[in-house]
Structure formats: structure tokens, C-alpha cells
Length: 358
Image (tube, rainbow, N blue to C red; front, side, top):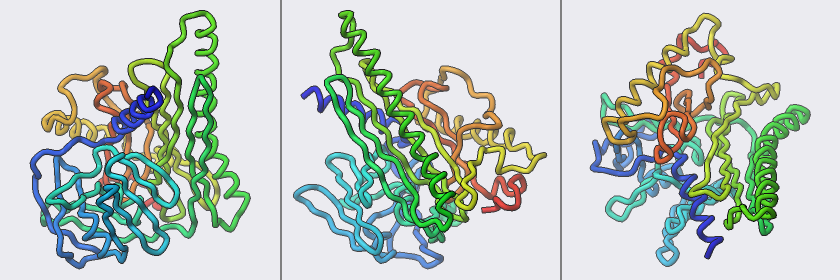
């Protein structure tokens, strides 16, 4: 029973770390176009979040969608894809990579709608809500000619349970570059493992003195692939650590890598030298904070008021734009989770270096 409670705590913390905001009455149900051709289905828009009907979009892309009522699971199969969505346990298994869903799906009239990130990550789609024309535009993108393998490591003692999942790139011509990139991707997972082992060592010492927590500690490390185009790879990592309190904490990090050179990009590396991207992105974040407070997504108070992003602020690339993010407790209480703020490439077009025109 105690182990189940720890797992539940892990899932809850991971769900809080994902910007899912629940579901209210739909703002609208715009039509959907795939590569410019309208399909017979409507999207679901809730407080700025886009959700798409899994069966309609999946079948339009050529995938087979099956629902297994006994287990309440959905399978998505097709060339290069083998996905199982477990609705009972909020879990997605995509080509051997297991991840947990937050507020990124819902059911409408017995149909499952998945969030835009699901389609971007698994089907290589750019998802854009064209508010002016009342249409959600889906465009297939050309992804890099690589494959991503998920490495899994797990261990458990009486003190701590450690579960790691991290990506490794396969298929690059330059094996030296590939090894360098894979070393960087593995490094984040090893740092999480070492943090967990350090926590376990401290717990063991506390137990010996009679003041240790009765609960088993936990480390859970996972990743999300966010951008895989134009010779670039952008990956988000989530490092969950439980150390005996009411709940654990998740820290998000990200890496944006050049598949040709193995180099890593910071936010400022994408921008022209004289570009005032800090002001533009900060203004966008401020406006979105106001919107989220008005919509009840964020509370009308903060732990620390937001003023500006840093020139090296944490970010990742998505199919639609640059996304900056803030950690739990950085500006808002724990329940707000990790807040992410996208800035579309079109808004940054005059600031991005020519090689990063996207």
C-alpha cells in the first residue's frame, strides 16, 4: 500500500508539472484542416488550449485507432508508431517510452480528445489555432532522419526507488557527434540519479539517528521530445525527487542541440546580437499571466512577482515557437505546477538569426 502511495505522489507531481488547466465549457469548436484539406471533425478549445479528436485525426494521418473497452485503453498503430493510451492510469506508452498524462486529454460524447502536444510529439504535426478564420491548422513537418531510443534504468532499496528514462539518438552519420549528443542527454539523467542517491544517503544517516522519515524516497526522471527538425533537437527533462515530505518536487530542464556539430544552444544563441528578445518575450509572458489569472488558471497572487526573463532563460523549441518556462514555486504556489509560455516564431522573425528562421 505504501508503495502505491509513493507512485500516486509521483504521478500527481508530474501532472502538476505539466501545464494542463482542466476543462470548462468550450470556448469554440473550430474546424480542422490537415495540410490544407478540411477533415470531418471539430477541435475543442478550452481556455486557449487545443484538443483534437484522436480517432478522426489519427485515421486522417493513416493510423489505425482501436479502443479496448475492457481495459479502457486506446491503441494507435501504423508505420513507425505503436502507441497505447491507458486512460485508467493516465499513461501513454509510445514505442517503449512510458509517460504520464496531465490535463492534456478529455472525453466529449464518448470520443477521446488529446492535447496538441500529443500530436506534435507522436505524429510530427505543427498545430496552429487560426482564431481569425475559426480553424485549427495541422501541418505535417519534415523531421530529422534519426531515431530515438529510450534507455530505462531502475533500482530499488529499502531507502529509495529510482526510475530513469532518457533518450539516445541513433542514425547520425558522424558517430563522434552522435556520441557527444548522447553523452549530453544521458548526463541529465545521471545527475538526477546522483541527486537521489545523495538524498538516500542523508535519509540513511537520519534514520540511524532516529529522525529519518518513515517513507521511502523516490527519484523519477523522464523526458519529452519537443522539436526534431532542421538539424536541431530540443528535449525537455523532468526530474522528480521525493524526500519524505507531503509531496515531491519536479524540476524541469531542457537541451537544444545541433545534430551536425553536437553543440548546445542557449536562448541568446538563437537571436541577433542587437535583438531585444528579452523585452519581447517578457511582454508576452506578462500578457499571458494576466490572461491566465482572469481565466482562473493562475491565482491572483504570486510568491515572487514576474518582472523579466533572463537572457539565458530556460527554454525549448516546439513545432510552433520558442517556449520559456518557470519552476514550481518560482513565481506561483505548488498547485500551479511548472508554467510554460510559448512565443510563436512569427513574433520573433525579426530577432532570430537567419540560420534559425524555422
